[in-house]
Structure formats: C-alpha cells, structure tokens
Image (tube, rainbow, N blue to C red):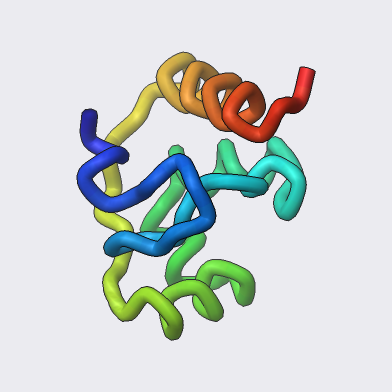
Length: 83
C-alpha cells in the first residue's frame, strides 16, 4: 500500500519511477539495500542520486523489515516475469 501511492507497475513515472524492469536493471542486493537503507543510499549511491535528479522527490524511508523487503523484491521479480 505504501509503494503504490508513488510507483506504478509499468514503466510510467508517477512520483517515483515505474517498476517495470527494475529487477533487470538492478541487482537484488541493490534493491534490498535501497528498500531497507533508503536514507544512506540516497546520500551515497550514484544510481539513486541520478534517479533523484529525475524524480525530484526523496523516497521516504518506509522502515521495512528484511522480510517485508524480500516480499516486495519477489513481487517486483514476478512483475518483471523473472522466475
């Protein structure tokens, strides 16, 4: 519920980037790290900083547990057709 207010399952940008293809563009470890260490990634990761320049809005830290982040990653993989 938290994610869908800013992200679409397609390539279309809403507030944040669309999710289609995200698991093909980024490694699972990077996606997990961004979901669980959002503020650090925004401050230090060049890929995230480049996305911030496009979206112009910092992704809020959702305080996800590792299990919740894994569930979202699996959802994203299924959305991308990755088995």
